[in-house]
Image (cartoon, rainbow, N blue to C red; front, side, top):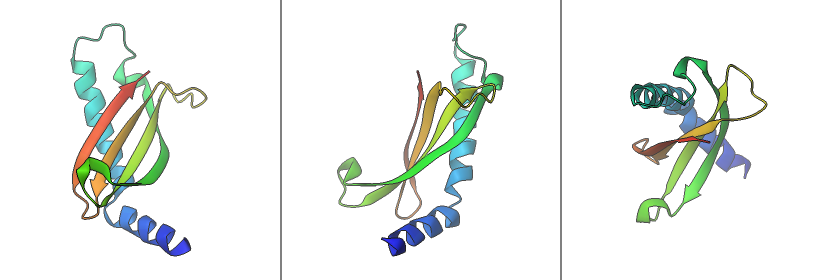
Length: 104
């Protein structure tokens, strides 16, 4: 298992997945804020916290894996209660196959 963890950490670092996911999350939040969501929290008040990376098998109908990187969203750096999540999936070659934003 240590070898698998080392390989996945190396893969994540090689593809800069934490930063790639964070940049994508910020762009997604700006797009979301541009929509007419008057009752939502302003994007300037949302903070991102690295949550987890997980290996998922048999996703998207392929006999392969994806590495999912997830950030939790919080209001004004209050990390005690999340207000949502943002996640990005990449293939074994580093290709982005999906991402999503969930606001609770």
